[in-house]
Length: 64
Image 1: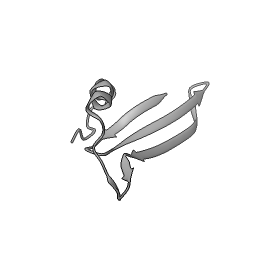
Image 2 (image 1 turned 45 degrees about the vertical axis):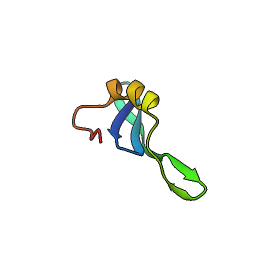
Image 3 (image 1 turned 60 degrees about the horizontal axis):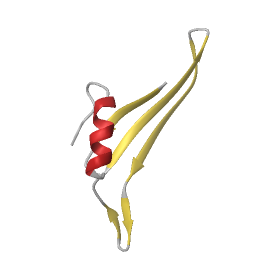
Image 4 (image 1 turned 90 degrees about the vertical axis):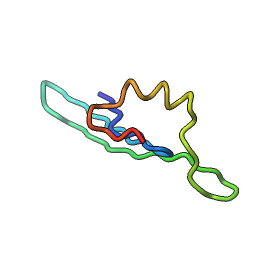
């Protein structure tokens, strides 16, 4: 199971869960950020990608 748990202005968080026989076997919380390299700084999530991600945001996740 892949869940988008947070969508911010320049970053997002995802949780990956794996179950077998109804028991959670694996969980990974990952955090991703968009950044420029010259100079190194945060940049906004591209609008087209944000629009495609927003429907998958779990209830309670911040959409900034």
